[in-house]
Length: 371
Image (cartoon, rainbow, N blue to C red; front, side, top):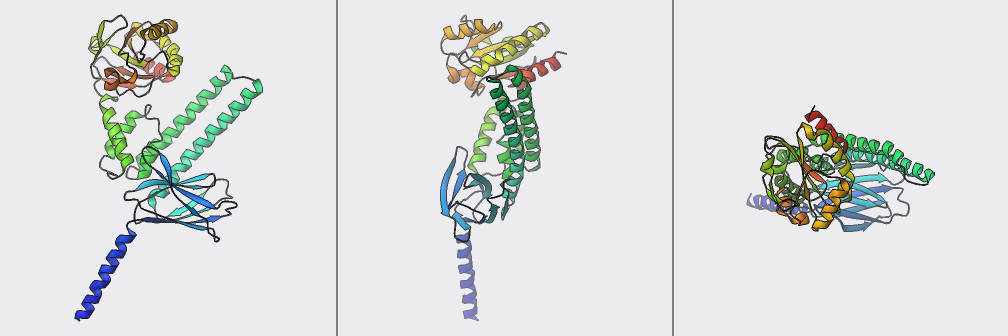
């Protein structure tokens, strides 16, 4: 009996050691149909900063390949096979199988052993669908411009709204996917494909939903820190007060606008997109200034001369202030300005009611607010 107990204990110990060894890596076993000239496959890892090659392997005579890699937390990986990229999520202990036919024009593939990878595949269908629509629109515009021998404003007026609608439709689909997959890393990777400036309010809400999830994933934790930083200056929060010098060296405070609607317009003379948006801002200001709409222009210029020239050239007739320190000024840091143009619309109670609204969105917001 004693020998049998020892034997059993030895078996359990060996099994436990074996299990621990298996849990220190994940494996991906793949098979290619019609590999053609493809001899090598690359494994890439995606983190919060970059995508980099971490391993490669040869395709066997039987068209099979295997990767074994350590991933102590669930993370996004990519297979690069020829000119195609295939996404999957893996963590230690996973045994994933992958199969694709290189001759398939739709780049379809089969994957098992990772539920999150199946969800990533679902998201990629959405991404590929709208990406194909964007490519088609781009090709149409390029061909028509080439036929005219130049870029055309009339063509831009036709195609820009179509591009914008396609992006808006894509974002709507992504937001739904994220909402349906909050407990999956696939939802996180889908969320990070959105325009953070345009969908900041939704991103902040999503970060609150997942704050206790994926605590060992560095990309998720970086995202949560970013959202925590912008949350105090997101829509629905009180706008932090500040004091700043005007172009004629007078002190201006945000609290000077208490009881009024004011748009903080962060811009600069050297910012092309800002200068392109300025005619729209001028137009809206002329329409709504008598109804109570104010603008405080906050320049990220360094040279006052350039700043003044741009104000005069663009006909910006509202109050102008600046720290003259580009992105390093205290006001820019207070409002976490990392790109321009950027704006905040603040209501008479001092609450941020809109953020980063430009073009038709700005026009629509003002029309609704001052109807």
